[in-house]
Image (cartoon, rainbow, N blue to C red):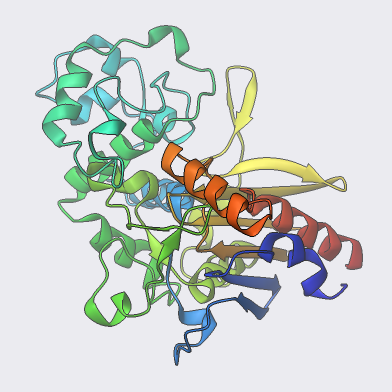
Length: 352
C-alpha cells in the first residue's frame, strides 16, 4: 500500500488543531498512524487519545440488542409497545426492535418536538424522557414502516429500551456484552477522570473549538467516546471468529430482507472492487469518524478525527469570511473523512 500520507494530505491541510488517528487492520495485526497539527505536546500516545465516535455508537447498540436476544432476554421481533406500557399508541405495536435497529420503523431522524435550536451548543442534552413520551403518545408513522429512513430517534429509543429491560445503564451493558469481552478499556459514554484527561477537544470545520455533546436519552444513537486502539479491536473482532462474542457479531453481518432492501443490524453494506464491505460513520459538532471492513480478506480501517464535517453555522461563516479578508486565503472547507477511509480500504483490497 502506498504511503499513508498520500491519502490524508488533502484532509489534514489547514487544520491547525487536528488530531487524526488511523488504524489499519489485517487479520491479527493492527498498525496505527497519527497526524497532528497541534503544537501542544502530549505524553498520551496517539492510539490512546479519546474521540467522540458519533453514530458509530449505533453499531454498539445493535450488538447489545443481539446479545440480549441470544440470552433470551428479548427478541428482535418484539414490538416496541411491549416495552412502553405507559404509552397507549397502537403505532408502537406495529413496529419492532428490529425496525428500530435497521431504520425501518418510519420514525423521523428526530422527534418533531425536539427543538435543536433550544441549545445549539449541545442540542440533545435538553431533550428529556418526558419529551420523548409526549412525542410517542401521538406519533404515527405507519406509512413508513418497512422503508429505510435513517433515524437518530429510533436507535436512541432502542438504547433507552435496552437499558430499561436490563435494569442497567448503557455503560454497564457496554462493559458486560462488548468492551470487557473484547478488552476495549477506553470505550464508554461517561468517562472517568483519567479518561477525561485523554479526551480531545473537538473543532468545527472552520477550526473553532466547540463543546462536547451530551446525548442524554439519545446516548444509544451517538454518545460513545473511544480511542483508535479500541475501535481497531472492534474491527479486528469482526474479522475473526476466535473471541467470546463472535456468534453475536456474525449475526450482525447477516442481511435482513425488509421491504425491498437487505439491511443489517447496525451496519451499512456496500461493495468496493466487487468485495462486500460493512461500514459506519459518525459525526458530531466537533468530531468525524469512519470504519469499514471486508471479512473475506480480513482487512479493515478506522479513522477518528477531532474536526467536524458539518456545514458552517452562520457565526462560523462570518468568522471564515473575516479570516479570508485578513489572510487573502480561502477558508478550509468541510470534508468528510469517509472518502479518505474508502481510498485506504480500496488500496488494502487491491494489495491482498
